[in-house]
Length: 372
Image (cartoon, rainbow, N blue to C red):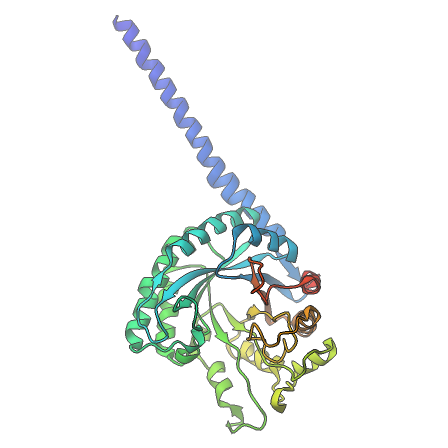
């Protein structure tokens, strides 16, 4: 009787040992072979290293993206990175409060898990979704700036860093984007950058919206005041690279040749401004010794795409070739510049009749050819 009990205990101990060994093997496969070795190989395969430095070739996701279409678009456009938005619900343009949309957060995590095993870099961005998406972040102007920034740090950035950026080792985190009305709150933004840097060891960036200068405008010390404020924003010295939403107004024409669009990037034709977009972006890079990244590069598939690139419906006339010509012009001007880190196509991940920025077939060819 005693001997039988001893044998049963020994057998149970052996079974437990075998179970522990199996679990250890599974953990090793998951954490080492898959998460480190396999994923690392995939990231290495997707690196874009050119004679002008390593580049990021990304796509911005529509806030209503589908995971299935995102994966299709990555292959279709030859991307090595994706700008993943986390929807931040803000009730109005003057609100001081906000919250992370849980459905958006959970979908982002599901996508990021899939992107990791494909070796696709994640550029994580808290995306302001104001008044159910009816208002633009460029017009946001809270009534209590102190309360707003506290909430942006504690309610938005802290959980995004803790729950997503750190555990999933994302490539970069955007700490703010296109907040035109409060971009001049320099002390607050540098505080935000320091806060994120303390809690996240990955790359951080700040996305500034496009601007215009004109040679007929009053300048201070030989420099346009709007551009001067952009150029000298101290938060740009706190980030790892500078992101720009590149919706620069280039021409006054319904449609353009690539040659004309290239020329306009050195001297814009709109209102005879003669803005040298190339030179201003290059000077921004030199000012802070940081690479400049086109955090949004998009053109509607319409006539006048170069007139108002920021407008999803600048005309009722569909013109996919004009969209492609705009992408081609940026490619010819910026592709071989070492100070330019790359670009993110606006916008992918969802196709329907309202997605005027989704790249047409001609644009897909241009985007695919970039850095090859």
